Length: 385
Image 1 (tube, rainbow, N blue to C red):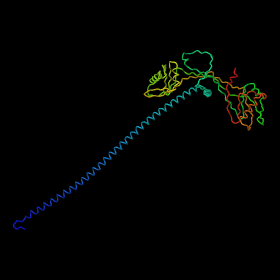
Image 2 (image 1 turned 135 degrees about the horizontal axis):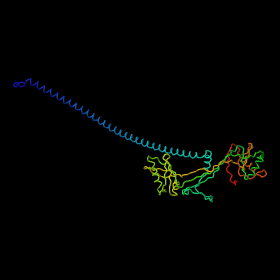
Image 3 (image 1 turned 90 degrees about the vertical axis):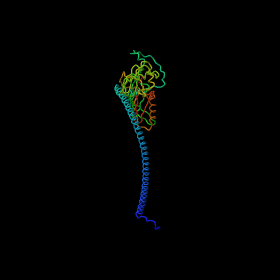
Image 4 (image 1 turned 45 degrees about the vertical axis):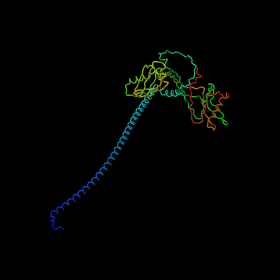
């Protein structure tokens, strides 16, 4: 140590020591700040990461929501289409139901014009008439004249049916009906009454009796098929005035390219969805009747109309008569035998064909072994003068 140099002040040393401690504290604070900064960065990164995850979740949720909205929209559209189809189907069903109801009403009106018994019998008879596709040639003869009320009568097709209803007869068990060609043979057998018939090894006694028939009816059915009018049905029920529909029908059936012609009158009934079209020219109505259906466009829609002829019918000369069959006899008295029905019928026929048994030529025979059957009698035109 240099003794000549002045000693350092104690005060200065203390100051230097304080300065040193202050710098250390600053360093600690800086380190603390660095640590806080690092932690803040970590928290910020974590928050940013959570934000990114939330953003992804939001995007995913938005996408799912959009898909759900699309599905909901499709379901709503589908439900609306189904609702429309349901309304259309319901309207069609109601329209068809109205047509059926109107047809039933018209049918009831026709039935009311005829007597109940006559209607049932005439219906059966009318079903026996059939118009064949191949029309056979018939020899015609002039029978009489009538005054034509107007020129329209030449366009119409008129038919006259002379109808005599068949009379049913119930043939009981072990009874037989024999129809002979000659009336005298049947009457002789009835007057004789008892007849012994051989059935193989045994003989049976049969009793011949006249036939008692119920009353029958005859009448003339006059049918006129119009040559100038047609029936149109299944007309759509659109929300437009009746006058417009009549005009549309007139224009629709006026088209010459479709076989139409000038229309004289249109009678339209909205309730029954039907109309009667009257044409001026000949042959136009026949063109449509042969087609049976015809297109009809209205309100930017196209429908198919049903076409049918206008038919008028009425009855004349209705008569009730008492049926008598003088060429037929009823045999009864056969007991149960082992022979079959056809064999017994053949033996009866052989017996009553022989002149030695007062018989003759048999036109028709029927024997019933078990149960009951119906035999039908019709007018004997061969013996009518």
